[in-house]
Image: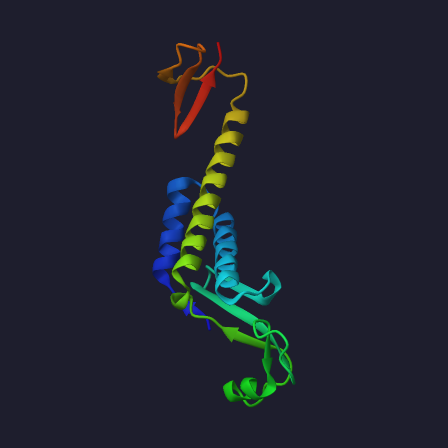
Length: 168
């Protein structure tokens, strides 16, 4: 079931503006985090989880794909015909079960949070790296933040969260 969640998309827009990461990149990382959370809670494979996030209409949906079978061999990826028809009488082959992300377990939610944060760090690091590569062979200013007397290394703050190490 698609959920209208304006706060989610407002936060996404704020992250995009604050960190300079494209919305598509953020959405991909959030999708990956939700897939991992669903896998933890329902013990299924990636192929059995569908996550749709549509910023144009401000909705996202997480679904669990299950096969309808006569005899259930794997309760995580299959559902009996009887149980499926209790949900909707017209079900015959294939079933999409809408999930409520509010019902995720604590560990699954923490995993999703960790994956999202890791994705943000990777994106920021990638942006910083490409920015520094574009400034190659230029003279830039920085502030000395630390000096390693033993090795002679100097740590510089280059602004925007960037730092550099100058070896002896």
